Image (cartoon, rainbow, N blue to C red):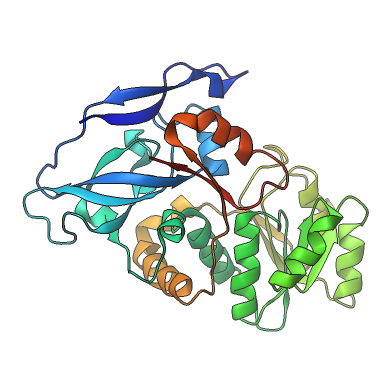
Amino acid sequence: MSNTAVEQQNFDAQDPFAGLALVTKPVPKAEPGHVVVRITLRPVHPYDLLSISSNRLRIPGSEGFGIVHEVGEGVTRVAKGQRVVPFVFLERQKRQGSWQQYVSLKQELVWPVPDSISDQAAAQFLINPWTVYGILTDLKVPKGEYVLQTAAGSVLGRQVIQLAKHWGIKTINVVRRAEQKEELKALGADEVISTDNEDVAARVKEITGGKLAYAALDAVAGTLTKQVTASVRDGGQVFVYGELGGWDATVGVGDLFRGVHVAAWVLSNSLAERSEEYIDKVSKLIEAKIIVPLEGETYDLADFQLAIKKSTEVARGGKVFLSG
């Protein structure tokens, strides 16, 4: 028995994905207090592609779903054969991600999956839902007020719409293509603005009757951040959590004078204090079908290059998976 893995064997900044290769590694042994998980399903995240492009992990992959293969001495949290989520994201310093068949983790980093949560939803349990819950909680948008978000057509953006609607928060959703409007409105979006033919700040002012959005979350950065900050009320909060538009973010000085506060929101910064909260709250939201992860195409682990290509396509649908 062997452990098939996708490994970054060499790195070229001009073509970082070319350095990935399928390799065979030994199956880890279950040390005392540790659990060996056979990972069967993994989503391909933008974070994974960023990690590959910046050579952060030897084996990519931020999350996944699997079955307990073996438990070490003293393990009481889970049993052999149990469905689990291995929190590989929480041990990134080991540079060992989920794009491999077997991982060994401390038992505290293995979460038993309730029967009411599907394999596909469990595989997406951590990155997007925890980020959505964390950002919306930290923004503290009152019921009935508007929150503005960019990249609203993404899997994470759709979960923002779902959770905000459940909490009574109205959403203004920025997308790149007008054809996404009806789809997002059917999901529960209150307003959708398309940057291909609309001015974001002008439309937000119109939608809110001049009040502007209470707060905003921005996955794009770049020049779009300037339009986002211009669309937020005096003293409002903007959380930048992604860099789809580049590593720089433009902000109008006039908006800074208005007291608009722009800060990065990074999931890993809150994990030490809030992991148990995230597990408890997010699992209940997924079980209740309030947050519903969007599923896309599935590729075999050996076809990781095809999965990467698919995950970068515009209008690809739901989250791309690697199985096997």
